[in-house]
Image (tube, rainbow, N blue to C red):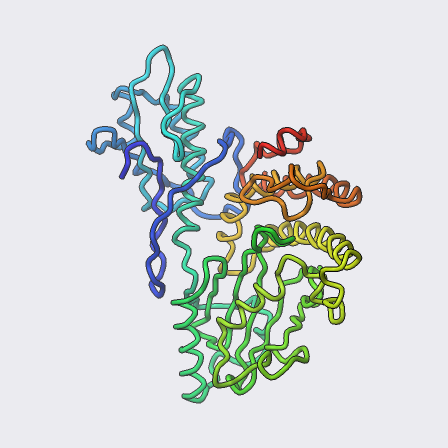
Length: 431
């Protein structure tokens, strides 16, 4: 391991998924953790983070021994660092590895996960920054190792929990088909779809789809509860969307109904319908992602696709997408406040890591950048187009931003309050 990297190894996760290559966490800004407070912390905090070690010379020593080394750590700094780890619910068996380097004139060298060491004013500040890096690293590691497909033992909050019983015996053909779907999901899910199956209720699945860049759903999390029918695969599964009372698409109703030919909830030609011998759960999830959560959802409405490409049709589509983006922001808040079971930490980590880009996009949109132009935290092609967001859209983004930022702050990204300040046109163009 690189001695200049602060890293928390994630706790072991149950087997059942392929191993993926580790990714380097990229931290765009540093978190002020002096008043960090993690929401819904109910775990025992005793002795967490105790295995903190110095690897500057590969001679591992406990964190408490650092006081006698080249870079002393004040007791208050250690207590603060320990408190941050405790508040983050880090398991007791996780080791925190850090590198230290000699300092002079009270200047400490703090390891950075993205650009090497950087200078800070004093040791106390150094401790705060190290703690911030540790938290960000823990979130990145969790997301990296969160399996795209896995099984769980309980789905008591599942939408279809009241239908059927765990003790119900299914036909061998049904079980074989469901297990085949599980295997396909385990091997072939794209990076932006995650699924959990229930061991005690094989007819249950829960899936989350991450909204794609360039769409009004960008960076959002969209949850679906799924039930295999008793006659599956002769009949398609049932699907319920976690709407939170919001209709974010012509195909996704505020009551949770999902309207799609593949589900038999909308008319379509034979090739668009469920085919028992061919259709799979993976096909269904990818169809929801590509056909529903797309760049121009307005044209999903029956009959409206005829106006696609026309000036009037595109103008109405843009206005519709602007409204959908606001609803998508509200869906983010809904998910953070009420994360579905078995995805609680995934929701927190996802929005913790993407909070900066989301707020940066909102700041750009409220200053006139066209919807969908934000890609990986930068504005795309703004200087080459005359397009601009509507006045209504800019006002609505500015109005709802505080609610979104407040939720991110509850996750620990406290410095994002500064992002509420208006950006100049020059800063928008520079990304």
